[in-house]
Length: 417
Image 1 (cartoon, rainbow, N blue to C red):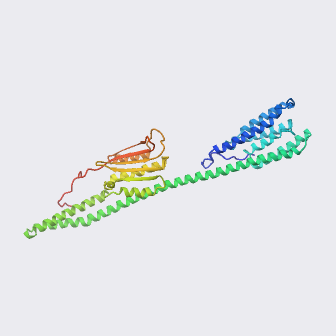
Image 2 (cartoon, one colour; image 1 turned 135 degrees about the vertical axis):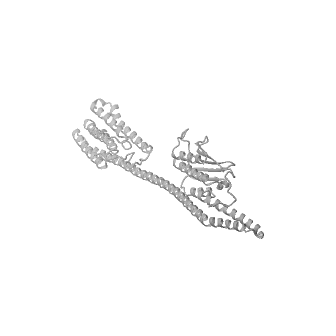
């Protein structure tokens, strides 16, 4: 029965320890085994008594070498034939001892076999193989008239080689478990960060929805209370003016002018509150959002006048920056992002750049970039993106600035509500 070597793709989907370090260990062990094999075969090949060595011994030696090389990387690249190969190399090493040289150097094959079997089989199976090989060596020495002293020497070497390999295997398995735990923790941390970003975005949307509801409530209160009262005041002043009191004419005219201005201001405030065109807070909203991000490190650079833009432009700026920074944290290899929002006479330029390593000449837009394009176009702007020659990925949005005075001025006179 064979043991279960550590796999490079364990069931949890977490990769095993990267192979280069273990590959070097396997290579050194394989070189040592080949040297031991050569140290066993070359003396027989160079001896003046080599003609006395049976040909079957040479065949078994080659089989042992081939099986050893095939099993040398069983720890990192297990194969279904590893178990049968262990049986082959054990049988070949015992056969070589029975055929020739039980009292000389042929038992080195058994030591080699015990070592390579440790990569594949469990500790119990390895001890069983050692016991079988020791029994075979005792039998071979008895048949060839040798002394059992060699049995004690080679038995100790066999168990030493096999158990040392098992120690290396256990260490590799422990490292695998530690690495898999570290990878699982890193994946959980990444999922937690994504969840945190999504929660922060949801909180921002909830706060915006709460603001919109509050603006709507205030606009209704203004319209239902002050609006009606100011309108009634204007009508009352008009009735007083019709009484033709010369002493009151100038005062009534001033009062009517003030009431008209007040009514105009109330209507403007109601319109702004209902449409959300209140003073935007781009800098504050993005600054608060950036502080909730665990990564990347975001540097913000805003023109102070950016808070004066209408709500739809401000919302486009905020959403484009949030999406671009989120994309960078998910896909970029860099760890810093620079955000610049500059306001010109007729345009606002939003630039988001990271320090990631270029991943290709072209970028196929996904949902994130497509959403940013749609937000920019919804307010009459445009968006570009791509890798920079000096390194890093940049997204640039150009948004229009409404020209002052383009909207129709409200009427000066009172109007029905």
